[in-house]
Length: 307
Ligand SMILES: Nc1ncnc2c1ncn2[C@@H]1O[C@H](COP(=O)(O)OP(=O)(O)O)[C@@H](O)[C@H]1O
Ligand SMILES: [Mg+2]
Image (cartoon, rainbow, N blue to C red):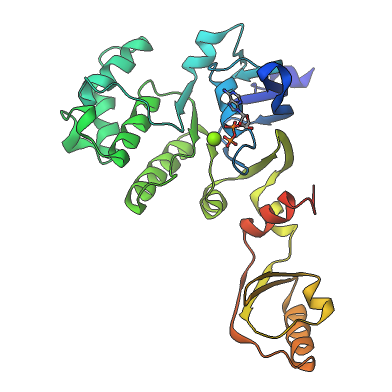
């Protein structure tokens, strides 16, 4: 069979189910998809969608109720050590040992994975994550943003082929976001596979080749980022008005107070929309015409229009 010579995907989820409280909470409801080696993949979804649960199952921190997960071909249950070693996971919650310095904690983490004489790579990680001057600082002296940088360094200390980041930029400053994405994008170019969960759609749009969307423990969308964007109206009109919209526009508008957002597929549709508003005597203030982004795609899917 020709497929037998192909290398396995970096990550493979096969009908993954996870229930809590004796089946009362269905956190994952049969999730299946693969992430090929070298891909930058974005997993999006609202709070409670199951993103962290999926990553916990992947990292062997939680056991799937049903289904199968493999990392670089290694089953995360039957072949745990090999699967875990292939992964670098940056957790959503800040967890750290307050008694060690930054460098000590990275050396300990190296030892945990059996990597010796790792100081050259540790220095490179510290430099690339803007931590060089914090190497000897105690973990408990660091700010939240600095701790998050250390968590990223810890995840990468054994040079894992697959990097998993669970909302790494939630509540962090712009500088860290830029530092982090520069470095992660470089590692991806060098061949590392990246799985990222985020709330920031513009981040996913800028970085990810493919995007999966979770809702209520199910995968409701999975496509190339460009395809997801192409599948929706491209243009977004935003304006303010105090006057009621004509029915045909109200039906496809998102209204927040005085602010109206209407999508259009092309320039001609922009013109007819504006002409309809003028004919109906609706005054249009502060008009902006921009590109619809992943947030619009996401809202459509989450509202059930496209699911
Ligand atoms: N340890 C747990 N015990 C019970 N319910 C849980 C536990 N962990 C997560 N859940 C529930 O599973 C669902 C998915 O949560 P989670 O994976 O954290 O979502 P996300 O990361 O997308 O916000 C939620 O309804 C959450 O309350
Ligand atoms: Mg989460």
